[in-house]
Image (cartoon, rainbow over all chains, first blue to last red; front, side, top):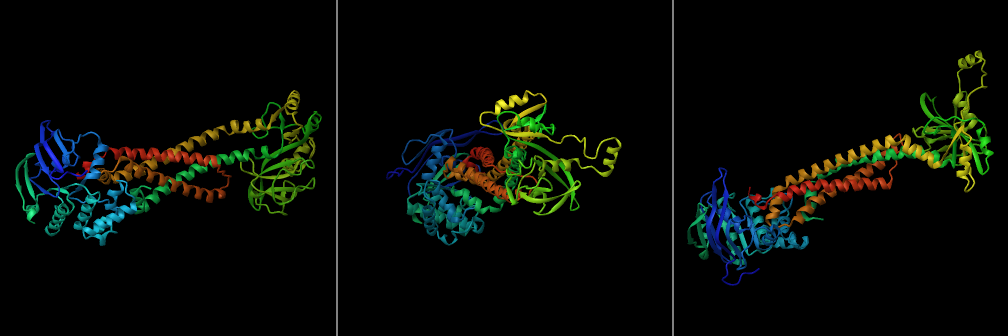
Length: 240
Length: 379
């Protein structure tokens, strides 16, 4: 699935996620959120804890079923919830995820962790590992390819997680606080890496973050509060 | 093999080996208990199958001589020989006795051969020869530990070991010692000097008036005559006639049925315990990986990939356990005091039960894995 020129990779319309809280009252985790994200663009999603950033990311990543609204990819029809297998197939082929914790499989080496994402898509293990080595090399971590996560630093683990997110050449990368567990220097490196991916591979990248130091890297920034987008402005990423 | 399953196994080899060892020991127990039953059955039927008798004429109203006691007249063989269609008639006697040999109390199943008609040709000798003299010669099973050429005293008389058999034991597992019928009767009738004196005082002779020790008369029949001969002899009234199949049935469905039932229960119990151990092992291993399973779902792994990872680990543990159990069984069962017979059918049955236990065990782990939601990776 390749978006036509000018067509948003991700298009969210009037998205609402509502759930019943512990006291029985309805809570709006997301309310009337609409946004578009185009190929090669890096979007920053800012806001205080509990404002709905992660819920937005999960709904966009087909991990959360919205109460109302629509999520479209590359101008296609709205993705309908319910068929978990179909959603999983779509995620596998078109969406890459990066989280605060790298979530690497502890008994796999770095290269195997990256290859895993391709193996589950039907690529032969040897070929998958060959391609995974290429991705690790691109992220300057090929020299650690044979190490298990326990033997990698936090920054190295996050790079492996980014490589895994890129494994199936997704059109959309969703990152939730990818630098929260890293020091400022390594955090900056990961953000620059995501920007480079957006630029060089033409992927649309949405990053949830608290880190104000990275604002300058984004093409566009939205601010959220109480489940709503309360502000939107251009960043300086295009000039970066 | 599943990409993750194999790597998980190699990364946690010790856990897999320990799990396989635990299950393997349980399977060895299953094989042992079934093998022991088969061994008892084999030993019980050994003489019936090998001695070459179509019919057994035993004491009237009894199903002897193996399932219960039987004593027939010492001259019954002559009556039987007079029945038209009989081919080979022999007397049979077997007594389980204890003797002091080399300072040790040993149990011996002393079996009489109707020499010269029966020199023990139906026995498979590993050493030596058949009985060639009416008195003083014996063929001993190797389990008795009596060397070829050795002379032992049983009762009042010495006997020279002229032949050695292997695995020739009775239903109790006692090694058999084959002597001629008169020798077998002498050995069974052996009395101390004081007993002889007391018998004399009561007017009984030293050897006279002793009761018959013949347990049965066995015979082969001419082709097609078996049923008619059986009917003729049974009509005498003082004896009963059992065919080879009757003897098998009396032992298998009569004397050994409780043992069969008990072994069946033990086998089911052991297989159930094995299944529970496998289920626990796989379930724990799955629970340890719930976060990774959520991650797999998040990055789009199909259920089949996760399912095969769990199932393949369970099957691998099962296969390793089965292989270990089989090797252990083949190594240690021959050292057991009783015969343990491992039949391919029984081994296949245990293997089938094991696969079923693996499937059921992994089903619990799979059911848990299927409930994991992809977004739990953020928890």
